[in-house]
Amino acid sequence: MAVPKKKKSKSKRNHRHAVWKGKAALAAQKAISLGKSVLTGKAQGFVYPIDEEEESEE
Image (cartoon, rainbow, N blue to C red; front, side, top):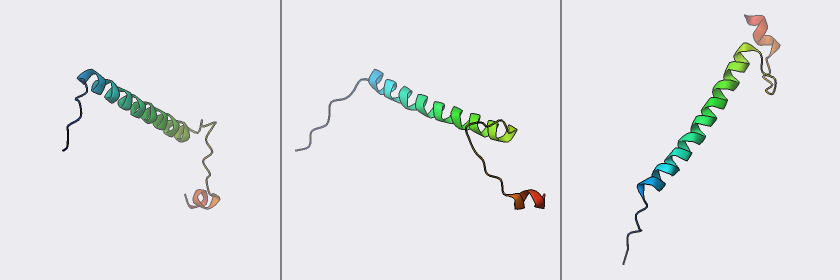
């Protein structure tokens, strides 16, 4: 017969949720920072190849 699991406390649930949200916020911050550095041309650790054909069309 199926037996329900013990209920975990709200504080444990909230802590897991906060950790998950924190990791997501950090990843989003890194992505925004990388995007800004690529757009301004100040990217040092990221190589963004640009084709010469695309430059001649503009």
